[in-house]
Amino acid sequence: MDSTAKSDAWRADRDHFLHPYTDFTTFQDSGSQVVSHGDAMYIVDEAGRSYLDGIAGLWCVNLGHGRSEIAQAMGDQAQQLGYFNTFGHSTNTPAALLARQLAERTPGDLNHVFFTTGGSTANDTAIRLAHYYFNRLGKPKKKKILARNGGYHGSTYFAAALTGIHGIHYGFDRIAEDIVHHLSAANCYRRPEGMDEAQFCDFLIDEARHRIEQLGADNIAAFIAEPVMGAGGVLVAPEGYHRRMAEVCQQNDILYIADEVVTGFGRLGHWFASEDRFGHVPDILITAKGLSSGYCPIGAAVFSERMYEVISKPQGPGGVLSHGFTYSGHPVSCAAALKSIELYEREDIFGKVRDTGPYLQQQLKRLSRHDVVGDIRGDHLMAGVELVSDRDAKRNFPPDLAAAEVVFGRARDYGVIVRPVGDTIILSPPLIISREQVDTLVDSLDQAIEDVSGQLMSRAAA
Ligand code: PMP
Image (cartoon, rainbow, N blue to C red; front, side, top):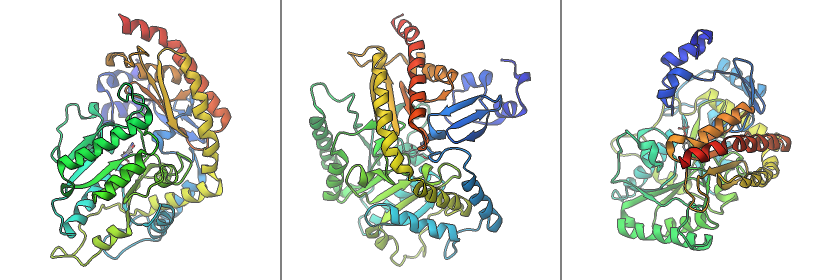
């Protein structure tokens, strides 16, 4: 590629921007697509090409791009107070009001909000405070964390340790292997041969019980799970799984941490999925992404009254709860979140998702006409299409073929952005998507798969 024809931003990016989750073997030649603006369901690159955003930026721009009301709220807040810390007894109006709004919308007695800069720092916060909670209760042995294979919880060192996606750890050191223990993924597509979904659910619950027995409930602080696994390939657990896991946790005095970074703020048609979709109230709820519709970095860990009572007891010699980030409760981020909440409500966005979500899932079924499509799954506006080279054996493509990446490239030629993760193509569009735009998304993906499947199959057979 002739880099002289590229913009200054393109060159600066290639030469200096160390990108997250990027393959640098191809990066030097191909560089990045410079996205210059966004409007509702569309993004536009600097060459003026427009794309239907099938992934809401990265599961986050739930209200769509170019929302002037959010921009206005952020600008107004930056002018009034751009930043001041929230340590100790200092606060700002948007942070205080947002904490109350979150407490009102999170389930049960999850009433106490710790603000962070994103999902990873919220998960780290949850674990630190879970340990702190048990320390203060006089149960300092309760340190271990149950997580799940396929779970994604972030990229700070501990959030990465919680993450159960194998490839992500490649070349890195693992930490806390004595603390974090991974259970099986609730992967219905790849469940053991001969089990129906109900039996698979029993199998997963039994596995958790056995692991707890093995490790000792007295040594376990928490279980962390996404209501629907996201980056692990959009895996929907069998019916009753989360409710039953919550019971197991309760029986063993293990805190249930629901990582709702993706599923919160309407992606599954409700404020949060834990209670409204899956019928249980966690002890800690993690949110980020859709909280500000992606307009500003922000996350939160929301704690129950029971935990708050212990955490807020008079402190020992340290004097204070020594945990926090410079940008905890950043006023501009909180203003973006408050405006987002107002828009979610005013436009009945989640009501729309309860219509377009099932419609997307139903339309995607059409893709089963392709031999390379092994599984189509999801919940509302969160979907995964898993590619296989052999349907009966459920065998994925050799990794060097990067099958989902090939489909992604072809879909982009048709003007839609999807997300390849392993051999799964992920869809998580802004929640404002219309039925017509769902049709465009699915038609383009269908055509892209049609175009490349022959070539993929013959390369896999070679
Ligand atoms: N948890 C889940 C379920 C996520 O999907 C992500 C990010 N995709 C994170 C945590 C980490 O969030 P962040 O990238 O904002 O740190």
